[in-house]
Length: 142
Image (cartoon, rainbow, N blue to C red; front, side, top):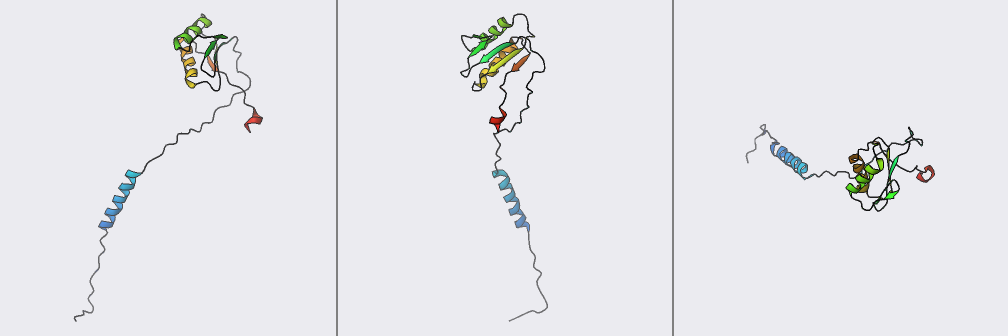
């Protein structure tokens, strides 16, 4: 047997394959990762004072029922069409386009019905728009 003493071979560690594998894993995880979007919005609504800032005078009122039916100035409309609601607002307001308009919608009313009432008020030229709310009971809220 031929043992050589004093001479050792230099061992070399090639890390190129290791780097290749790490890059491949990084690319795999980047491509296969899915991002979930939160569908729930956390909104902090502003609070209103109990007293109105200005006296509205004699406002025009649109009531939206839970079924989406409209009443303008206490008179129920025959249908829920946008044109019908717009015409009822124009006739109820007369020539006074600065008259305040209050939309009183039931809490269970469809959102589309409230948006339609806002759209009809815009088409009728009534820009002084308010949405009525009930005062929140502090004892029930806790």
